[in-house]
Length: 551
Image 1 (cartoon, one colour):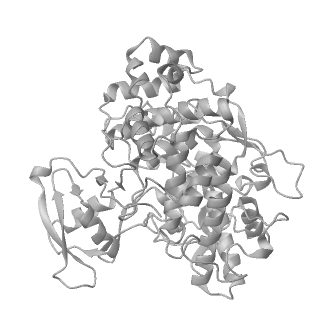
Image 2 (spheres, rainbow, N blue to C red):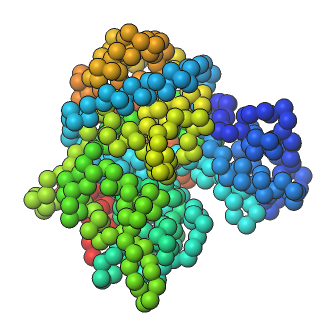
Image 3 (tube, rainbow, N blue to C red):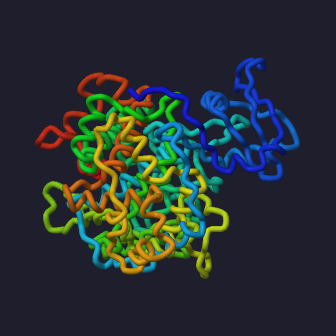
């Protein structure tokens, strides 16, 4: 199990102008008034400061006192994102934001995305990674009937089973519910239940609105809902048993299929055998290094185009547009009993055989994830603000458009600076010390600058960006490290990236008290159910998809 230590807590938008903050006593929900915690609320900055003791309070739920500021405090808390440090006491980088922006622009400007090459990893795993990031990576505060709670950092599908994220507008008449979850129909003339449940306006009525920011992630979330429905049938209508089974099957897929495919064997085997060496568990929180740098290497594995996505090929821009948050009219308006409902077009529901090798289906060529590195898909150079997972960094450069667009690389680098990420050199040294020297050498400055793009290479070798050869932003280092180690030994992720991802996701599964690492199998009906395994007695993502999508 992860070792415990008192790492500092990082709360975004919670540190400005603390001298003018008002201290407010809050009580535990449903507990004695003698048990209190203190929030520091800054009315001018509309920010709340949290310490670790207050965090533990949130994990049990708190009730705010009645006051004129109660609504504003609730709003401020609802926008807080809380992260830990992967390693305690590593010095924060002090990179000039203008230089970080320039690096992001250089990554985007000369990016020869047409020269990107494929891995052997089916593209469905790219979006499984993004779904995992959503389930773990927004440890935000949610309000329910006057009580504030944190979403859990465990891999327990609270992004699926949790409280509906959006302001609900009511389900459209073409949705169906089984147990705890609903599904919606596409624009097909018959009921197909291949989409999220939506309001008549098209807004997905789901626990995490980010699972409707990209059609590939949305369709994977639909698969998990369908799998839950099957588990409900399997367990005789027992909602909680079905939920537990769904979570445990997904944990099995992540731990024994996804991570085994993307993490180098030495790191994978070490963490499976010995548990994490670095991750904090007091309580466990997702680290800023994981959320803001290492796991975001997956963005570089996204393809520009997916052959045979559905009835047609789909560009990444198509996947970003055929959802509510970024749709611009791409959801189809259909007339149902005299009322207008906005639905996913039926020809945009995914053919999973184009995204993962499915047994017995050999005619459809599978799309594979691109090799990770500093080369990004074209669509990631100019993203709409509606398509991002969090609030844009204040002052981040945006390009003209309606709505304005921005570079993913610029946003990610500025975000890393905002949360106080260490540079790669300091982080690597601390990680190597923690692992007692049993860790590959750090990349040299020449290796960091040995990029494909002439514009980026010039920035790193002759321009103001030379500083980044010796004090490298962690996200950019993870991109370069991964590219170098793919060339050297075929690993999908480099050693720093792989260690942080493996430890974090393992710890997130271990955080679930009913998860597969804590609660032993209760018999043949527990995950993975024997009849769902393949001929090699294994259960992975393709088996989950196949079982969920069978009629």
